[in-house]
Amino acid sequence: RTSQPVLQIFRGLLLAAEICVMIVAFTILGLVESHAVFTCYPLLVAALSGPVLGESVGWRRWAAIGIGFIGVLIILQPGMSVFDPAAVIPLVAAAMFAVYGLLTRYVGRKDKTATSFFWTGVTGSVAMTATGLWYWEPMIASDWLIMGCLCITGVTGHWLLIRCYEVAEASAVQPFAYLQLVFAAIIGISAFGETVRPNVAIGAALIVAAGLFTFWRERQKGRAR
Image 1 (cartoon, rainbow, N blue to C red):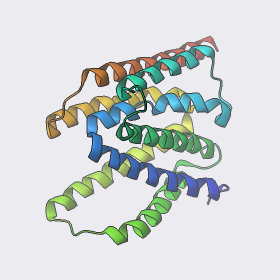
Image 2: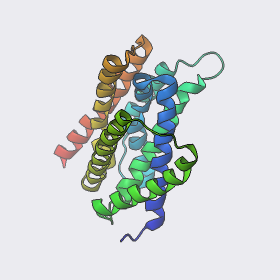
Image 3: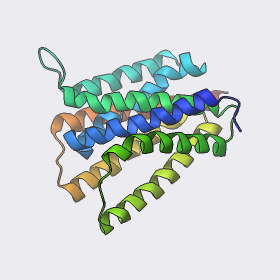
Image 4: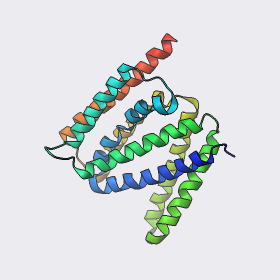
C-alpha cells in the first residue's frame, strides 16, 4: 500500500516511456553513442535535486554540471543551425530518467523499496501491454532466451536502483551510473562492431569527469559534517 499512488503511477509510466525512447535511440545511433549522451542524466539529477528534493547544490556542483553540459555539446556536435535531431533522442531519454530517479527518491521517503518496485512493475506492464498488443510479432526460441535475460537483469537493476534511492541522497549516488558507459562501450564494440568517434570519447570523458567531481564534493562535505 502507498500513500502517494499518483506519483507511483506516474513513475511507472515515465520509466516505460523512457525505455521506449532509449530503444529508438539504440536503433538509430547505436549502443555506444546513445549511452554517451544518456550519461549526462546524473548531472541532470544533481541539477534538479535542489528544487525537487530540497537537497543542497553548491556553486562547485553547478560548475561540474556546466562542464558536463559542454561534454554533451561536444558529443552532439551542434552545427551553425541546429542539433542533429537523432542525437537529441537519448538526451530526451536522459531527462526522463533523471525525473524518474528524483521521483523515486521522493516517494522513497515514505514508501518502502518493495512498494515502489511493485508500482513501477505493474504500471509499466499494464501500459506497455496495452500498447504492445497492437505491434506483437512472434519470437523464435533464441529471442525468448534473450528476452528472459533482459527481464532478469532489468528487474534486478531497477530493484537495486530503487533501494539505492531509498537509503542515499539522489545526487550522491549518481556518479556510479557512469560505469554503464564503460559496459555499453565494451558490449557495443565487441558484440556489435561499433566504433567510438573522437568527439564522443572527449565529450563522454568530460561528462564522467564532471560527475566524479560531484561525487568527490559529496565525500568532502560528508567528512566536514
